Length: 258
Image (cartoon, rainbow, N blue to C red):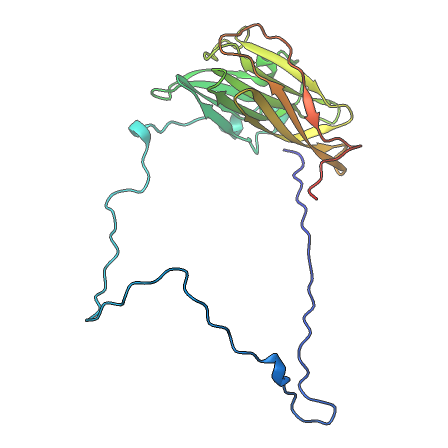
């Protein structure tokens, strides 16, 4: 949200033109040995013999009707920038969402909302601060949400959105039902000393949730990209056992693209 890293590398290649004339003023000519005939190549596949007779043009076949459609005619308004708290100024809302077997979850920078999957009717919403047990003045932003079919639960990550908050929040729902904001979620924190792990992106495999970040020491100093991974619980496990937080990349050993 705060800082988007864009590294653009310019490569300049100088081109040397052939001289227009020699020292004596006559036109420059390529040496004879530099001009060679192209060698013929055998085709990879033997082509079919051409068909004789008049050519006919075939008009492209266009399918009738719209190219896109709404499933079941569903089209409902969701969260918007003005739903954000004053703390996050409303824009950009950093909207994200995910759909599961029974629900659709949408997030903007301050709010989580849950809708029924069948008709997208609104069910309930909460501020991040209330949902995740933080004080009302805590700056939280850059949310991510995904449905994990392997563990049959919802996964999330939310950034501590200040250079004084060196952590991101992550966790999962205890079951496939995300509607109990107070008791229905396992909530954890990943400390990131000295770094704001900006723009976290969430992914998952069959056994892990994965978070990629851009680490900044301040508003102008980028240190490294970083990848975190945490094992997800088995289906039916609602114990909220603290997972080990693994990571690759740091200021001392930055991730490189060599």
